[in-house]
Length: 124
Image (cartoon, rainbow, N blue to C red; front, side, top):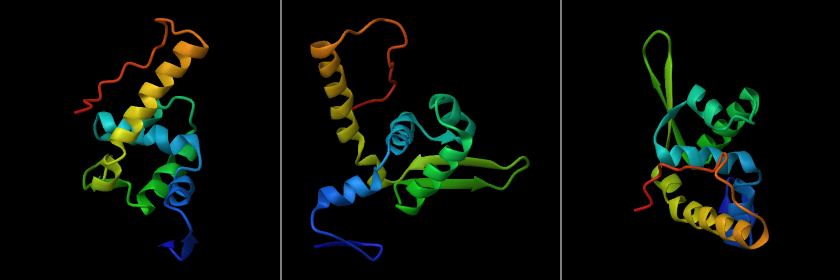
């Protein structure tokens, strides 16, 4: 058995699915793989997400120790989000998802040069 926050799981995949139960959390992690970001930068990167939803997802990921929220004592306040060591371990998983998505589209659709995901993530 696996126990997290008073929840019992029979399989580690269930733990993962419980944490990443929506598309927004993976999007946040994807963009934090590039570098640490401020709230506004994440809003711009994930342009389909509302500020309210982003705030909720950031708090959920912080509670799960996947991201870190660092507040700088200055005016105006500066808050920077980054991945924790366990969050960084998702990098190879997201790399595989990135590559799988490309292969899937090649086999079942088409890729154009318009609005293609250009990542600056260093995979090594």
